[in-house]
Image (cartoon, rainbow, N blue to C red):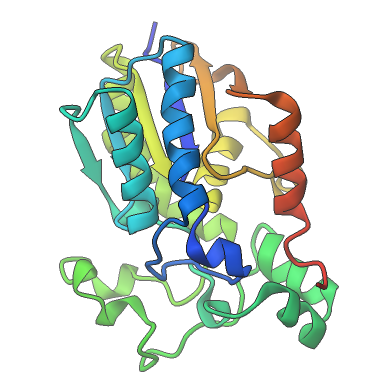
Length: 249
């Protein structure tokens, strides 16, 4: 049998607190986010799950979440790989904007299309926009043509899948427990693939910050079942809070 798969969305970030579209902007965890990350580690300990290798993005909110999980579980020695392919979905020209204010300006229906439709990206950044990732030194070795100026969830899945197949799958097949600490949309892309979800189902699926998702996989690496680890009532409330982020304040 393959190893277990654990997915964790980073803990609450400072821009989550401000209800801003974050995307590839590199913000850190809030104090609550650090607590959530440590709690994620305690949930893994409670389940007696010991990851053998971890994968994360190149954004500090995911990296620090992983550090705190490793510290809490006393596994600071665990091998770690970082990849831009696990970054959050790129929100294009929406990055840095207040979600509720964007709804007030453009309407709930339009923002829901930009935020949650499967294959429609938000307005793209211009190539000369200083927020474009081609100006960020962490992507200096990435082909500029591969760097997004805006992404749909479908686009996000397209960039995550090659990394999943080339780096994560071999570790699972080697019977290693794999921990992936990433972002709401890069993880939703994986959930869609693992659970063979329809486009309409994944649009409504919400992943709260700092809550581990445990997958048991069959020999073909298809899901035998997934479950959120932790207090189920609190997790349901956190999922609902994610869904309501664009509501007017």
